[in-house]
Length: 387
Image 1 (cartoon, rainbow, N blue to C red):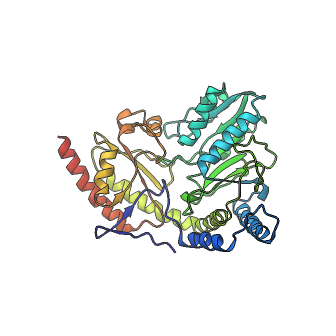
Image 2: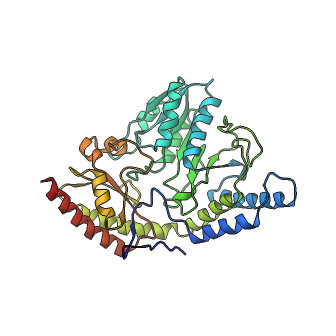
Image 3: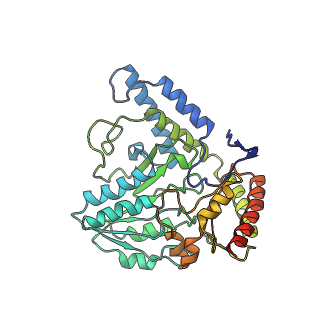
């Protein structure tokens, strides 16, 4: 199904940055290409070609709704999770600012959460950060203490993108339910296809195709049907009043296919990746200056470590010479210190030296062997150079 072995300089590329983006599934790509060729009409057009394209979108939406166990009208197509996050946060804030201007989040969010929140602070909104325990899990008592009648939104990710921490969403939702004027938004970008997703107690949730072996440029926002948002983009007919613009027929069909495929073997994939993760933790934990930041509350797809006294970009480029690809922080992060690692460890040195290794069901045992071998070489060379 997947072909992601790429020969570079005579060696196989070892890709360990799946949390940044995933290779496109060939079936998904084929769906996109065939749909692009066959359905040429604008879905908003009234003629036959437009109706055919619109029917395809409706079928794709129906499949997505079934997979997520939601209603078709609750799906809004976007360009990806960054837009979905902005739409949820700004959409709620500007629509319900007459109720209050208080928003709660955590220190473990993606930059596409912090960006709109920082913008809203300049517009007079107040943002509080709920405390998390030593494992990075939301302190439910502190959350309850922070909530007031002025709170209109709580935005907490399902899975942290740098460390992989999984939050207890159902417990969080139970507390938020005590405040009927407050909405619960969850960034599900790193959760879909890795763990079971339940939207029953969630008001809004963000997803992106390129994290589930789909094509970049398409995502969606789940929004409960009774919730009204202030749109980010106005003007023009589309699949929903909340996001104007010509619907991207082929991209919508492709995300529907990607979602169906990634959910087919979720349990088996999780078990396999967990074994790879355990081996990495065991071997990397043997080094005296390597600290494992990911803990037992993290998904196995993400392993965050700190190699103290070695700059993360130095280690990244050292491994890159062997065609091994990892990441420092998240692909969208800015700055030299990992906010998430610092929030978890309270150790600036570890936060400055953290790297993320992200795995997939496509990752082979041989790739782990190869990575560990080259990591050992790079570690020793860089430590010797430091001395």
